[in-house]
Length: 177
Ligand code: S3P
Image (cartoon, rainbow, N blue to C red; front, side):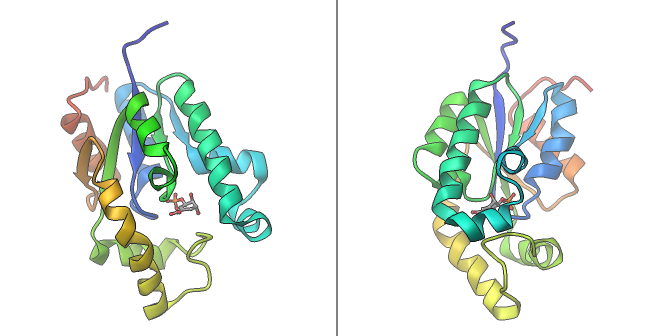
C-alpha cells in the first residue's frame, strides 16, 4: 500500500537523543520506529565487542548495509548512529529516501549527557575528563558541516516529547495523535 509517507531519519552526535526522540516521534506520525544500532546488534551482538574484535571499518560496512535495508523497507522513523551520515554515500541515500533531521545539541549540553550515559559508546571508551572532551571535539568538528546538510535542524536540548513536536512542525507533517 502506498501511504505517501517517507522515512523520517534522525541524525546527530552520540547522546543527542536520536533514539528517545525517535520513539516519541513515531506514534505521533503513526509510523514504526527503527533504531539502526539496535538492528545491527541483533545481527552481530553488542557493539563494543564487535568494534574490539572486528574494528570500526567492519562496523561501517554493517551500518551501511542495515541503513540500506531500512531505507528499502516501509516508511519509518529511523534513529541512526552518530557517524552514519558521515560515511560513504549514506547521507545522499538518506536524503533520497526521506527527510533528514539533525538533532542539534551544543557542546555544553552534550558533554554532561555523554558523561552521564555515553560510557558504553565504542568510540569514547576509556576516555575521561579533559581527554573525553577532546575526543568528543575531535569527532564532532568534521561532522558538524555534514549534520548541517540535514533538511531540517532542530534544537534538541528540550525534553524528547518537545523535540518530537518540533520535528512534526518543522517538517510540516500531519500529526495523528
Ligand atoms: C557512533 C555512534 C554510535 C554507534 C557507534 C558509532 C559514532 O551510535 O553507531 O558506536 O560514530 O558516532 P549513537 O550515536 O547512537 O551513540
